[in-house]
Image 1 (cartoon, rainbow, N blue to C red):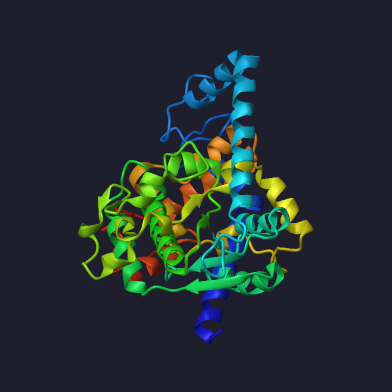
Image 2 (tube, rainbow, N blue to C red; image 1 turned 180 degrees about the vertical axis):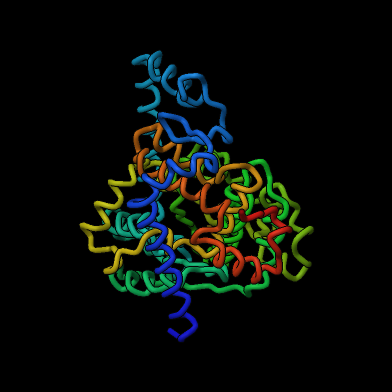
Length: 394
């Protein structure tokens, strides 16, 4: 790794460690002197009052509705839901068994691989349960990929014993996408605009690779929440009609507003391919629906964690802090909170930990503590100013 990469890696690690230490050891005391800079939060799920109003008891409507639905949920409803989940798992397993050895070329499944615990868990479990399924791991560098994430991938791929394809499109493509998305946020903020459009481009590139190489399956490690709330699906598979169609927009933004005709060739054009060449897009974690702790325990058991165990704060791509700060300034809270609040509500994430993270992110977004230099650097790379995205550090 070159010296510039090492400098970037060192800087990212130091910033992440400082942030985490402050959240864990200092913020519980500091917050009492900063209450005028943070909003009230739901007593049960830590949702900001800017995201959803709280009642007089300090609970949000989603928590109240969740409690009511849990109280009145009958045995019949519970049984019906469990039956559907079992049916999904059975169909998924049958599907993967059917496609073992079915690829026209060397591979049967293209697996999206970020180097994180979810995608590592996904590959190893597929290897164990479907050993005849020929897997190709696939990573896309969006130009803002964490140097630590790259290091993790280099460390883990040999352990997974899987072929790996690393694709790095020209950075200008992503700069155009992120610049436009950040200045045209939809009602779901950065999560539903910047992060979503990034994911959609990643999947389009996977669709193209799969069609070119005759790979019949694409496996993506999106969580059940991401499938339901991001892709607006209630199934472990993307509808075939969607896969046969052409990509014309992302996050409700027409692609022609962002890219020129040559750049649009990167996007998926399903109508140009024979239907038999269009891969099926599956979301295994939708079926498995595991708690974060379960996945972490398994990857640790399999030895699929970085020896230095870096935090997601430093392995996520470099625009995540900017996205969080922009959200706080424009909407009063980070749009990424929705997913974690739901997990807290369902007992899949720790409320105390995530409330500290949410609160400190809100505070530091307003003051610039720990994030100012990172935010300014990201904006400079995108050719934007703080005025362009509505940031006003106090």
